[in-house]
Image 1 (cartoon, rainbow, N blue to C red):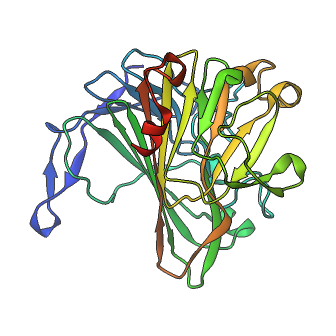
Image 2 (cartoon, rainbow, N blue to C red):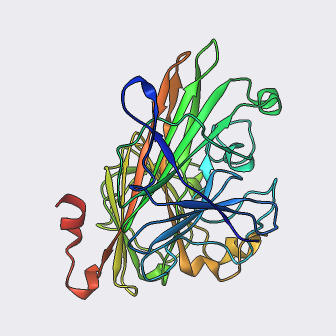
Length: 329
């Protein structure tokens, strides 16, 4: 089945009239491969691409201009409706993990989103491609979480960058609170050769120690066993240095003060039904999150966060990249 190509039109000019800017924007396509999960394909002139499922509003692929996959997808991931998809960038809302009465990581990742017909305007760009999605509370959701909301997500693909901008609006007549995360399943060559920098000296909750609070003592986070930590009050920039692939992935973020670092390692990987036994070696989650202090919205108030994932060629071990410059330069 040939994909349908849709030219994007944006609002612009006085009076809110539609101004077609297709000549300045990339096209994107909607593809249905027969699995019942329509996906949006984003491309940009430099050759990179991204795939987004309407199910979960979830980015499931991000490839660079060399067609190398930058996100991890479990070898046993279940791409079916009503099942959480193990990989890509799941949206955790209105609850992270089991910090509440809802299903693990909330229900947003297990709902069918829609294309947003009324997105906020974007400045025109010749090098970026974007799509806007929306999730609204349903009668089913209101039974388990009785708060009316609109959750919007803008996904922007640019040369060497992937940006996600979530917004939550309180459509209810009373205030509500929520926790939130964008769970970034990153593809790495060998997790035991990866370093995460930017989280040193910070406090974290260790979920392997019943959520006890500790202070990070190492000058960088390295991996030789299971890790499940929520780092608190984290900086706006974190570097994930992959020695073997000679590249560094830089995570920038705003409105999301916490960062979750997770790898299940061998024993837990074998216990997870949707996770390959050896998949833990080639993945690492470094999330943008708001967990310690839930976000509180009054009626009609809106919260906005953002994250940007970008790739820097070369790596610290090559002697060509100083991680300090990546983080603070």
